Length: 234
Length: 234
DNA sequence: CACAAAAGGTGATATTTGTCAGGTTTTTGA
DNA sequence: TCAAAAACCTGACAAATATCACCTTTTGTG
Image (cartoon, rainbow over all chains, first blue to last red; front, side, top):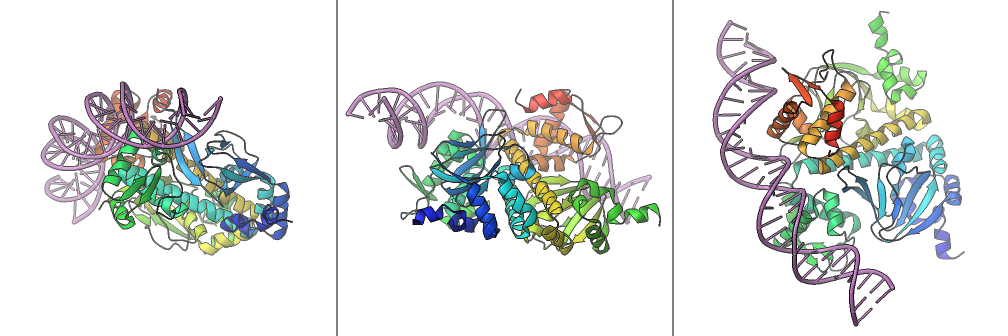
């Protein structure tokens, strides 16, 4: 069996180490692996739409997805980003409801679809796994609270600064110190909850102030400490 | 044993029916009941502070609590309200972290403190209970997403309208159609993430437009359908 | 390559919201 | 019961943000 053939088995998949699936037994993992369907998803493609019935979850092997919600005014608001190791669609499977978010690929992705029952059955019998899922949800709630706080208490420029620091922390930088994950201005605007033009202006302002750098499409943070300070209202 | 003496046992507590504790076995409930401490908390008093280590959760028997987070600019943002049947502090116990929210009594309350282990042990052995807790967290996440959406896509007046509808739906109205739960303008402002003065002005505007009514300290919704429509951007 | 589409950008202006600096009314507790 | 505190309210103004209209640069594809 070739190396990447092996990796196609959940038991050998490195991604597992980053999420709750790591708490499953060998048997449970085999069971998941036998039922899973690996899909390649191209940049811009939609993984699932708001309101759909998901009969399982998606485990992200590669790439990044944006999870957004459509407002009645027609604008999309990005609620969170999910990357390698993250499991998406989990909330709606647990709540046994339709998904309330749309998932779109920000770049080329590889995901594994895992049918509902392969998740729900272990949830009922493997406390270690359940505890991990609980912790994931608890962490999501904390993140959401932080988003709520910054939306209501920070201005657009501060929120953009926060978002850039978040992107650096979670997705890293290349050799020249530029963010590996390059969001369009529109996605960045949607992530921080502002208009496209306001986003552009504030990114430019941060650049002018020497806190960040821009080279072509790439964006990088110049002075992390100063950026942090700026977010905290000086 | 007198009636309210009986009710002091979790096994007989009506509140249980509204939360995940309803999924516990008789044995587990007895175990909880023997360890719990009932507390009366006066309006304005603090149940726990941001950053504290909670060695358990609080189950609300009566009254309403606001859960808020302090921003670096010194303002409090209400993240959610919790009432009869809700269990607070759950997230931090599950994540095994300090609480990230402050809990304050909005009116006089009665809560039961339940030590950590009486929750964590059943979590590891009673899948029915665990599933209920998972569903609670899943629902919290959904609520948070909705808050994020309205903070970023709705204006202050719409958010106030939303909040009033929420208060009516969750806490009901008195005989005259006024909200049973009366938040101060300041709390309402903090709930929708705006300044006190903006809140006051917009409440007045809604009144002037005939969508809500105000009598003394009491606030009531006059036309639910119109209010709903107003929130949806006409 | 060429050219259309997408992304990035700017200025002018309108709108929304926050802030400050006063008020008045209501509530509370000594 | 009465004085202080808290809650509520208003106007004037400043600041932040959205919107519209347009233009430039980059990207992707036949």
